[in-house]
Length: 155
Image (cartoon, rainbow, N blue to C red; front, side, top):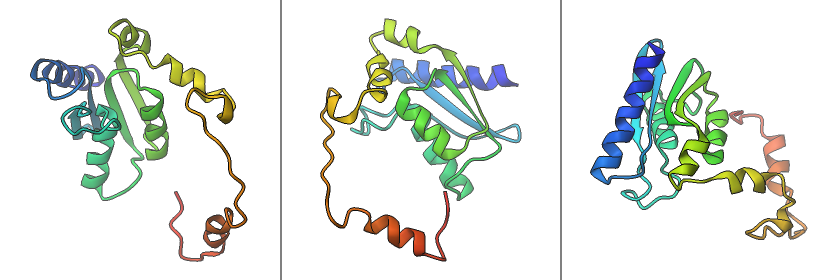
């Protein structure tokens, strides 16, 4: 079954590439042997740089299951997830990920995100996009309030 679900993700990517609705990527999320969400990349059609196929499928699956986590779910992606999608996968608590093409295959097609993988290890102030820490006196207040809450939903 895993190969069939992965084929569905690749078919979505093919459809997306042909239609011009977004980039050549597709993702399918499965729970208990059933597809619960599927999407192609919607970056250009949604005018949203975060609308990668995996993120879109995660959003749809969370809405369908009415939960912000996806335990017991498997993601099938036409390509190895980029760093942003990898973060979303971990935050969603997916159980497993299968992918067809590697990030190197994507780079050969001019979708190279290796610089982002590299940037993660660089100190914030030395990154290509400067990330500068400002020390505000009340910066920790949101975390202090959160720590004191007794009715918080952990994630």
